[in-house]
Amino acid sequence: MRITDTAICLTVEDATTSSAFLTRHFGFKETMAAEGFASLSHPDGPNVIFVRRGLEVLPADLREQHAAGVLLAFTVTDLPAEYERLRSEGVPIVMEPRVEPWGERVFLVADPNGVIIELVDWVETPAEPAADATPTTA
Image (cartoon, rainbow, N blue to C red):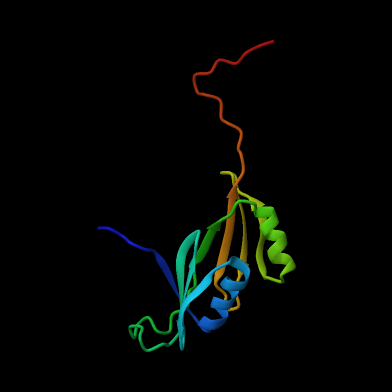
């Protein structure tokens, strides 16, 4: 298989507001839109598509589902600066920044439709001593 592009498609109440949110706060560009549908691209990431919940182009058993339990995760170069920028822009922070034991720094925001966006970067963690290393004494 040869994959030529990647998109994440999320079902939301209002595709227009989610599209405007990613455009305004995350640098996405709306590449196509119609009633209940918006397709966005970003030079550094996957395409994101928003489809209005209940839209008849969706299979009947998927029409009423919401993008629950799904996170859009973006790795960024300066997490503290992104946190301050988004907070100052009034973006709802749903989890304050924290550092996980494995070295991930992370915080979460929510778009107007409740789509959770995770912003992450990595901190240097001290190297573990090799198992065969002999302790030195002074």
